[in-house]
Length: 111
Length: 119
Image (cartoon, rainbow over all chains, first blue to last red; front, side, top):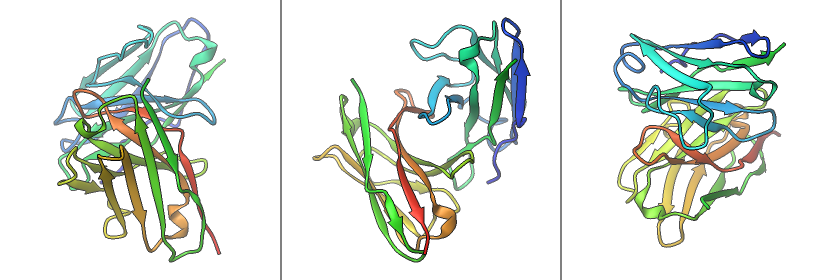
């Protein structure tokens, strides 16, 4: 099971919107609405920010939104803030022998 | 408050064994699927293993299959990961995570425990 493909880095200015893509296959992202996204600040524990493609857990800012088209999921951060600078990982349930696969990770830089 | 506290990490030689523990509190442990996820130094997240609430079904990532064993003791609210035949590439921070209510995502996560594999 290969890792889902994410861009290595994405940057934006404060207030702008950015989108991170997460490309999988018909065995994972393309076949299940079980895509989740995690935010990880340096030296910190990963934190769930989106589950089931587009749902936000309680307490997560509505500046974070998720979507999916075919085998590609996306995370959009609107109104970019300095505190959004972190690594972001997608994850999907899969039909392979390994039930979950993470993305390669994206470093978000706020300019 | 939901808490997950990992322990058992440390330095081990290649080919050696180590058992990690994850003590859970603040929720009904026996109702939840539990997971292990790891992160090598400076690298991304990698799925390691999952176990269903009553322990009867387990899953593993391809890189650890046949070497690692996940288990749980619901009477002690504790999750375990027995790691055998350790390799240098197993060196990572190991996180335990609870399945999110409703399933298919990881929430919350413990603070992690570092496993160093070196001679």
